[in-house]
Image (cartoon, rainbow, N blue to C red; front, side):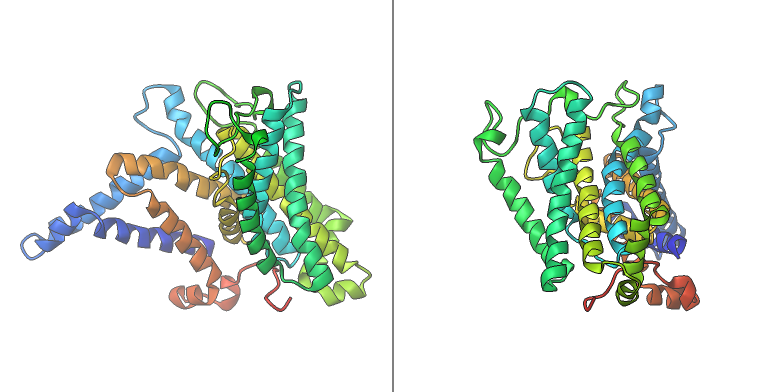
Length: 378
C-alpha cells in the first residue's frame, strides 16, 4: 500500500513537471510533425527534475570534494530530524486513540522555550543544552496537557481544541517577540537574540556539514517511544485505551489519566521537535519558527502507518524531498512547491485506502490504514 502510494504520487508529479515545462509544451504543440520528440522531451524534463531531486537529497556524483559529496544527505538528515520527532508525537497519540493536531502549537512553544533558555541564561556547556531541551519538553507537554484535560473533564474533542491552541501558540509567540525579554539589541521587534553556543546542538561531523546531534536525539526518542508503547505498563494502557476505551475501563485502566498522559507525552515530543529546529539550525526565534512542522508530522505519521519504524522512515523520506527540492529548483527551474504536492498526494492516497484498493485492485485488508485514532464521536 505504501509503495503504491509513493509510485502514484511520483507518477502524478511527473505529469505536473511535464505540463509545466515550456519546452515540453512546445514539443507537444508540434506533435503532428514530430510525435517522438514530444515524448522524448517529456521524459527528459521529468528525468532531469527527479535526477536533481535525487542529487540534492542523497549525493552529488559530480562533487569536487568529500564534503560536497555528503552535503546532500547531511541536509536530508537536518530536514528529517524535527519531522521524525513531530511524527512520533502524532504516532503516540494515534496509538492512544487520539488525534493530536496541536503539534504545530506545541512545537512553536517548545522552540520558544528552548530559545529563551538558550539566549537568556549563561550556563556551562552540556548543562545549558539539556536545560534548553528540558524547557522545550515541559512547554510542549503543558500545551498538550490542556486539550487532554479538557477532553476528560468536559468532553471537548481534541481535534477542535488543538486546532484553536495552534493559533493561540502562534499569536503568543508574536506577542512575546514584542517584549523586552525577547528583544535583540540593535534589531527591531520580530526576532529574538541568538541562542548561545553552549545551548546549540553540536554538529556531528563539522566541515560544513550541518547534520547535528538532534538526529541522534530523535532516533533515541524513537526507541523510547517504542519501548514505552510495547514494553511498559503505561504503554499497554495507552494501546488498550486506543483500541477500546470501554474495555480498558472495564479492565481497571484509568482512561481519563491515560488520555491526559498521552496528550502530554505527545506534546512533549512535539516540543522537542521545535527545539531541534531552534537549537540545530535556526538559533533565533521568529514568527516563522517551526511553521508547518506540526502538520508535517501528521503526514509523516500517516505515511508511517502509525508505527515507530514507519514514522522514522517516512521522516527521512520527507526530509529527502525537502532537501532535494532546493537542488531541483536551482538546476532545472522546477518549482520546489512540487515536493509539497507530492507529499500531499502521498498522504491523500494513504488516507483513502478504499480508493487505492479500487485503483490497484487490492483486497480491503491490504489497503487498510493501521492507526487506532478514534473518530469524531470518540
